Image (tube, rainbow, N blue to C red; front, side, top):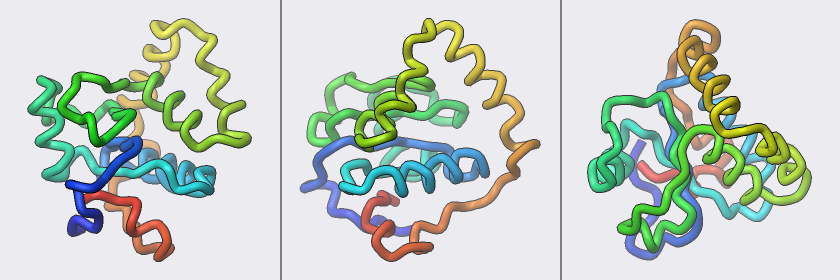
Length: 147
């Protein structure tokens, strides 16, 4: 995938995801459908943009088990990011509409949510397979991907 967005002018929230995970790809497609305003952008953790972000913020650049939500890309130099279930909740809130209701699972303590997340992350490749997400499935989606 090539960079389809001018990073210098990019603003708004960005979700970094495992670009080779079947479950992650399904989640990204689902978020694309829910986010009718087109507010949320996406970048695979394996791509150069995400790798630079991970290194800049001392996050593990080879561990792709976590979603990373950056609330405002223009301020990406700041250490303002959310991981795992906090990232999911923030992405759902960004999508708005009915997705905000789904973010209600945030009432569970983070420790419980992230333990469940870690369990799913451990088995995701076995259960959902591997592959690459093709953002061009819908032309309107292509511009929402970085790298």
